[in-house]
Image 1 (cartoon, rainbow over the protein chains, first blue to last red):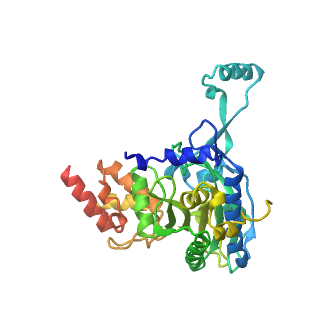
Image 2 (image 1 turned 120 degrees about the horizontal axis):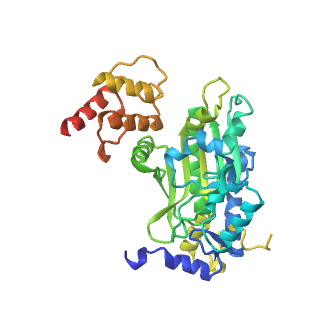
Image 3 (image 1 turned 60 degrees about the vertical axis):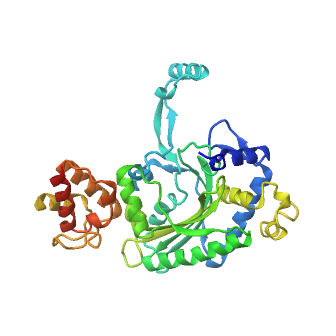
Length: 310
Length: 78
């Protein structure tokens, strides 16, 4: 691998600047003050773009019921990415044994049992059962602004753009195929306007999810053939384009899994979009430099980094 | 072989129609991307074959005829 293809120099620069705070685990970082202000500033730009549509704001914790993961078939598509949650239900004697093993940095996993929740692997998952529980959709469907969603993916990496724990700014549209696709088209244009405001050259391209195994390769080809997923790409830690935003048409996958009915009783279709907040902040730093104070004044103003601190 | 293929498609394809001709588009009949993977895996198990990467496409599994052709070419080559 050529030296300039390595993601670690950029990671080390982000750490040296105080933008990322190492935890000792790959892909798990704290975030410094300035880095977080960039994330917040960009999140507000998305707020501005979402506002005219009158989306309903919903917020969910970074955990989902295990049942939801089972219903959407997550383990068929992404078994390697799940973060299941385990907890202790034993007695005092076993607790003492576990604590002693942990004190010696041994393997204490045998004392744990799986809990009925997992870490949230995709920010939009919690909203589907919530919408299904309301009964049939209105004729104009549903539009949900889920805000910055904390998600987890089990993929430790040296690439600072490939975090295990990160935030996706998610918006979800549910309704007829026409409603959902029209919305996605509109947002793909709108997102490019948002990126243009912060002077980020962002290319849109058809994409696929990292489905697991041979069946996954087939799913990936299907996803591309049907143009179900588009990504906005920008260089981050290397010159290779990395997704900073995605636009996903699920067809009736979630409508079917959770029983979401349209106003006419048909199974609802859905689409979501996500802006990877940490990735956007890093792409901006790649583009404009890691010294945020030296960024173009227009970009500073758009991100509200030039005024008094909130 | 066609009957075995047809049974696998009916069992795994999550089809929304009861009857199919050999040339009917299975995706139009309700088969999803996810259920087409189940069909693919069931075919591999039933016929003891392995679809090469270049055959793991939407077209390979689009109709009963297409599947029979694909399975035939692999089983014949084995």
